[in-house]
Image (tube, rainbow, N blue to C red; front, side, top):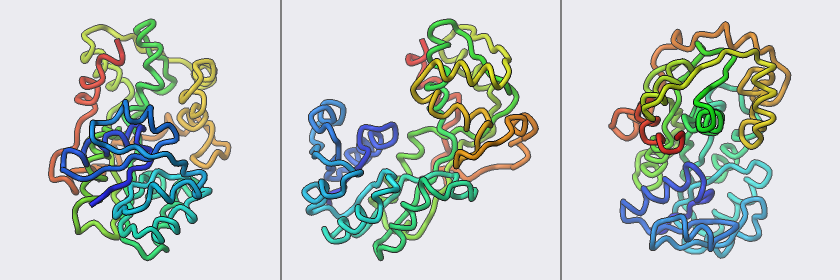
Length: 290
């Protein structure tokens, strides 16, 4: 069987490729820069040129493919799925979002899910919640430079999910029967406050990290100056905007206690292996914070 992985050099896609290779699957990796992708991915993975935003570039990549791991690009999803069906793809696994499960996402991931569901092909949706990796993007620069984290709501938390748990579920859905028509919401195994997350990272690197409480406005200003992921997502992550970008009140974050939600669904329901903890994630990324 041949599996086409889109978003193959991303945080999840790269791990999906690794997992498929480990299972003996023939993997084809889609990239807008295939030569660069070939350097990043395991030996033996065929990299092919293509762009999900331009579905007309995908026909060669889709030829002979049976399973597709689909990175979400809403504006082109229907055409991408139509071309996949015409090429003979029979199973699509979508990298979606837990925001769909919560009813918060109507424009980013939901249209991709619907395009796949209406195709008549086998489908599975993988819906991760908050990525543990977000903390590397948000806090990495200040931890590396100053050994400090600045946050307005240190006692707020969520159930951060390890990117490898997400990839493991995707690999299972791509290669094994029994997952068609399922939407798997994935979280970490326990609610972890931001304060506890900082402590876990400090323990992982073996050094003290100061946690400084700031106002939401101060945090937004710092993230804007930081650029990249932090700047792009500051309003949502700090509570100034909802998932769809509509104005929100950042004070609502401080009033919310996720621990009251009880246990959340994790990868264990699919893989049979306990979900990876945030502390384990921090140990695995210790070098990235030093």
